[in-house]
Structure formats: C-alpha cells, structure tokens
Length: 278
Image (cartoon, rainbow, N blue to C red; front, top):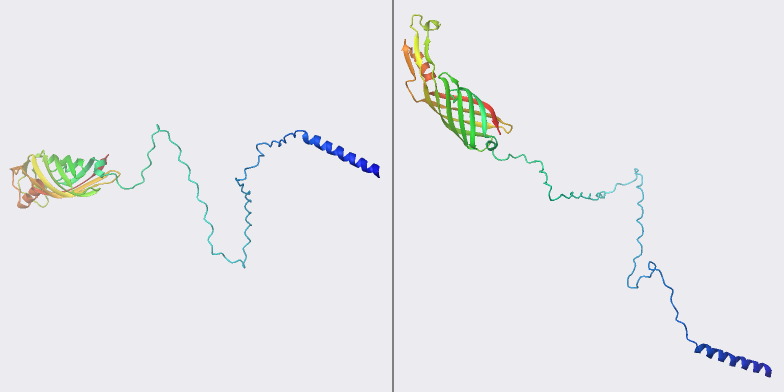
C-alpha cells in the first residue's frame, strides 16, 4: 500500500513537470483556410433576397357546358405592341417627301393653270366660229384673244374679264373689242326667193370692215384636270355706222330689219370649251 502511494506521487510530479515544459513552448498561430472569390460569403449588411418562385402555370379552361355560367368580367386586354424604332438617317441623306393626303386645293386653280385654249361658237362673239386663247395674270383677271370667221368676214378681237370669285367656277364681267375684214360685194336675187316678188331687181351690197365693242356677263369654269368652259351673254355696239352700202336695188322693210340684225349692233351669245394648261 505504501508502495502504491509512492508510485502515484511520482507520476503526479512527473506530470506537473511535463505540463510546465509544454507551457513554456511558443504557440504557433492558427491560419484560417482561404476561400475562393466566387464562394466568398456576402457581408452581413447585404441581404440576399430569396429566389423567386416560377409562375404557376394557368390551368386550361374547363369545357363549357350548359351548367357553366357566363362570366360578366371582360377578357383582359392584349398587351400593347412595341412600336418599331425609326431607322437612323445619316445627316447627308435627304428625307423623302411624304405623299400628300389632303384633298384641299393648293391655291387657286387659275394660279396653277394660267393658259387656256378654247374653241368658240357664238353670235357676235369674240371669235365668232374660231379659237380663243385665255391668259390669267392672277385669279381675278382674264385676258382673251380670239380669231375666227363670222357673217362680218374674218374677225379678231381682245377682251378683258374680271372674275368675281377665286374658285373653279366663277361669274365674270367683261368688256372687249373686235374687228372684221368684211365680205366685199354680194348680190341677192329676189327671183330665187319663193316668197319674194319675181319682178324685183337684184340687190347688190358692199360689206366693208366693221369695228365693234362688246360688254358681256358670263361664267368661267376650270376643272382640276384641265377642262375649261366660258359662256357669256351681252351686247355688241357697231362703232362705224357706214359698214354696209347698197350699190343696186332696194331692200324691203323686213329685209332691212334683217340686215340691221345681222350686220349692225346686236346681242352677244357665245360658248367656248377647251383645255387649261399647267
């Protein structure tokens, strides 16, 4: 028993000596293992939100049956379409003009169609049976030049018109002057007249040049595609009263009235149609 106690005491002393020797040695520093950059933990202040759950797939609509009530809720509107981006244009390129969609006229029709060529048919008209050339210096002013044939002979004239409106159709007031070459000598034989007296002497006249002035009221129309029409009525005054001489024979009162209507002052009635040029 005494021996056992001595062995225990000796082992205790040896253990104390070993513990003191171990405490005297320096302790090596503990190095933490390096983590890869991708796996580095986020700082505690930056909270990472949890991943969003995928949207739940909508269940297919149930088959409609007689027991299925109709819903009063309108179907959802389709999402708006994204507008395509306009292609970038270089600064050197000239933008192309867009087509005109406005149907309103571009200014007055007589500003775009200033010149018109018309064929006239009328009584005491500017050209009689012939051609009339019209020029519009502005929408309210028209200048007419006419030439043709008539009972006065070959004739030519000029006229100034004032258009009251700046529209395709407009009334106008005009004043003009025309001159004719005359027909020279002409003979009328009463024997060839079924209603005349067979014993009358033939009548010979000499129709000299005539000069007339006219005042008219009418209308002027120009279509957007160029069709043009001018019509007028008025009166024509004979300026030289001695334009007709009776060289032989004598007219009856009725024939004299007819001669005055044909070869003297009288009414003006004319209509001309043609094309207006741009």
